[in-house]
Image (cartoon, rainbow, N blue to C red; front, top):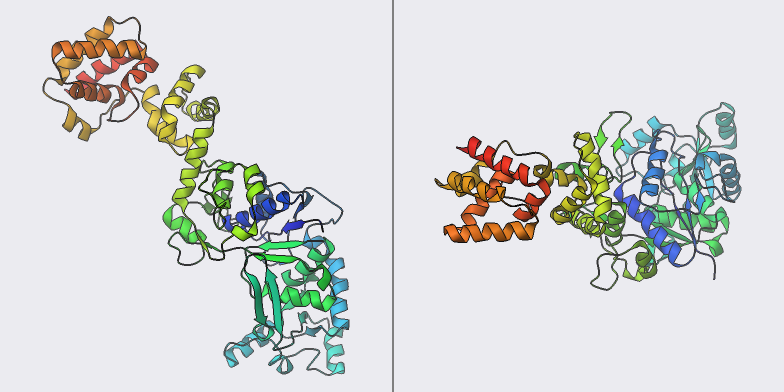
Length: 503
C-alpha cells in the first residue's frame, strides 16, 4: 500500500477562513489515521494578491489548533522548498514540456484586448471556439510570434483544452463525477511578467513531485479538478494521480449560500481562527482565540461540520477523531454553520477544565482590574460559577459581587421583592448573623432557617431580599456559599449598606 501523503496548501492572500481550517483538520485526521504524512505548502504564486503577514497568520492559527505538520514551511523536509514562489525554476521546465508537446501555447493578448472581446461576445471564454480569433501562437504566423517575443512583450502560457472530451474523476466522497471538457477554458498556467506559474500548474507539479497521494480540498469542482486531471494526463502522470475528496461547503447559519465574513459581522461571530488586522484598512476582524474559545472545542466543533461518527457522541478528543474519521461518513451536501453550537462546545470543554486551571486564567482578568484574591478562595468561586458561563471572560459579569460590594440594586428585583418590613427583617437578621462564629454554609443555613421559622417569616421573602443586599440582583449561587466566601464582616456590611441605600 502506498504511503498516505496529504497537503494543506493555503494562499497568503489574507486571513485563514474557518472553512480552510476545517479542510486542514480533515487532511490531518485522514493522514494520522492511516499513519501518513501531512505537508504544509504555501501557494504564493499570485503576486498581485499577496498580503504581508498572511503566511505567519496561517501558521500561527494552525499551531494554536494543534494541527501539526510532518513536512513543509517552518518544518522542512526532503521536498523543500515548500513556498511556491521559491520553486519557479522547477515550474519553468514543465511549462516548456507542455509547449513542446503542443499541450499548451503562448498568448499575447493584452488585458484591454481581452476586455474588448468580452464586451463583444456574451459569456466569452478563451477556448477552442475562440482561440483562433485571439493573439497567440496558434493564430499568429511564426514571424509575428518571433517579433512579439523579441520585443519583450509580456505573455502568458495557456493550457490547451481539447473540446467535447469526457473527464472522469473518482471522488472519495461523491463517487464518479464526469465533466465535459467544453465547459473549461484554456486556463493561464504561466505568466512571463513575474516568471511564476498559476495555481493550476503549480499545484499539479508540486503534488506530483511531493508524492501527494490524496488531495482533500474544500473548493468547488470547476474548473480546478478536471483541469488538474487533464494536466496529469498531459504530463503522462496518470499512474501517480492523487485520489480526490471534495468536502461539503460550510453554509451560512440559515443554510442559504456559502459562509462569509459578512455573515459573521452581521450575526456577531468570528469566521477566522485568530484576530486579523487588514493591512490596508487596519480593520480588525475577530478570531475564535481572542473571543475566548478553547482550541480543542473549535476542533471538535469543526470536525462535526460535514462528518458524523455514526453515534450519538458529540464530545471527541483529537485521538478519538483520528481513530473514527473516514470519508464514507462525510456528507455530500453543505453543512450549516451553527455558531450557537460552537458556544455549546466551548461550554462543555470549559466544564472539563480543572477548577485550578480556570482560576489561573480568570485571575489574569482580576489582575487587570487590580483585584487580588486568595487562590483557594478563587477556586471555590470557580467551582460555584463555571456551570453558568460559556467563556472564562464571562465569569467577571457573573462573579463580580464576590469581589466588589454592590452600590446599586436591580430596580425590577427591588420592586418585586422589597417590602415595607424588609428593612426591619434585615436588621434582625444581621443581629442573628453577628452571633454566629462558625460561618460554614451548613451551620449558617441551619441557624438562619430556625430563626425564620421562629419569627414565622416567609423564607422566600427573607432570602430574596438578602440576595439583593449581598449581590445587588436576583442572581448567583446558593446564598450561604456566597456568605462563606465573602465572610461574616462583609456580609453584615452589605446588609447595612443595602438598608441605608434602598430606604
